[in-house]
Image (cartoon, rainbow, N blue to C red):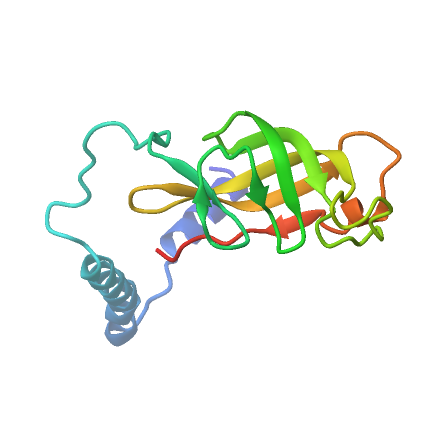
Length: 175
């Protein structure tokens, strides 16, 4: 036999001796941790586990009536006239997409408050063509309401009194 094979036999035969108390402790600690983690994992389980039935729910399109509340809290459905604010009244509204998540109308805004100074007098306040976009459909028990409005001029030049309205949060009845 060569010296390297004898040295290998010696190394393989020399296993350090471990006292009895330390040997049993080496196996006891991992067993306790395993038992502990298994007991924690079992605490949150429901009998029978989670049960899944059928396909995942999908959004159901709204099929009920849709309104916009005007400045006087009157719900209006596809209105041709609406008081957007106390000083902003829209006439001749023609709608596209009413009842969808984004309704768009074209019409005219009337300077009821005479912010322009009403050059033709109070009896004939100025008007300007505008585009009204309603969004933020909020569903209630039997109806849905738009909660956001953006009023933009249809074409330039735009008088300052038209630009003052702009972006609005609308009233929605409480749930």
